[in-house]
Amino acid sequence: MNQSLTPNQALEKIKGYCAYQERCHSDVINKLYSFGLNKNEVAEITAQLVSENYLNEQRFAIMFAGGKFRMKHWGKNKIIYELKQKQVSDYCIKKALTTIDFNEYETTFQKLAAQKLKTLKSEKNIFIKKKKLQTYLLSKGYESKEIYNLLNQLNK
Image (cartoon, rainbow, N blue to C red):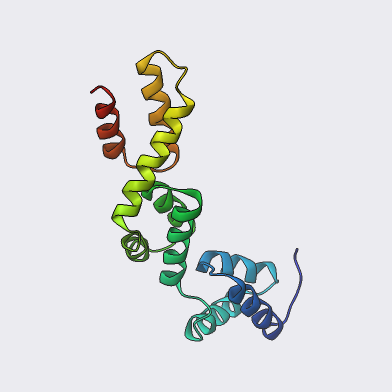
């Protein structure tokens, strides 16, 4: 989609892109480069988007973390990984994680584990059952310590 836009055309187009949903800096910068702009133009437009509050990394991180947790039931590790992939700062990642309610997080973790255990009812070997549950919860991004504690409770 290599279009060549003037900086003014690109600015108007990217404002719409940012207004539609929260975006991270790296997505916006890549989009601006796809419009055929040079490094200085991209830097200038990015600075303007930040100053006009179209682009806010902390707001993006908070919305991203909350959305992925509520909608996809991702754990903190997966959220951290995805935000790092989007080159979000550690400060903004920490801020975003603090907005996830601890009790809601625990409840979601327990609910996911219970749902997965239901699908493993026919598995007679407790070790295979635990391994499958562990793999599932790790893939969802939950912390090893939480999973370990849960698996130990299954013995009792």
